[in-house]
Amino acid sequence: MTKLDTRFDELLDFPTVQTFKVMGIAHHDLPLHVVSCLQEHAPGDYAPTVKPSAKGNYHSVSVAVTVTSKEHMELIYTELAKIELVRVVL
Image 1 (cartoon, rainbow, N blue to C red):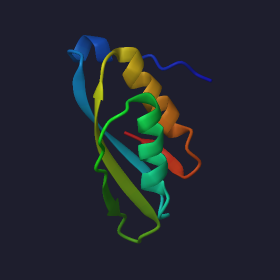
Image 2: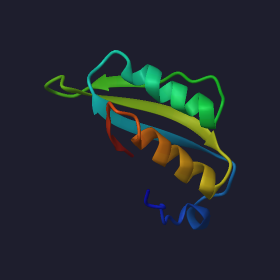
Image 3: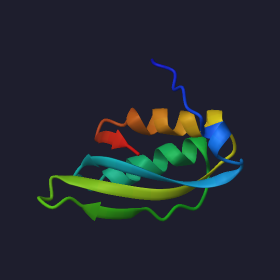
């Protein structure tokens, strides 16, 4: 696994609310997988926003999450990217 090399600590003050945008295959379980992953690493009450792509093949799931550190943010990006239906995490 590649370690992320980000500058989040230089750009943000923690804790902060970060909106993660997860692009994945259009499947009704995608938001469930995203929220389940977030609950594991940053428990909270999440209300994901789901938007379909123009052709409907992909969905964008946006979720606001309180992150506590650079390492916490990197962990969430890495773990979300491991979900089988996910293609990109922004």
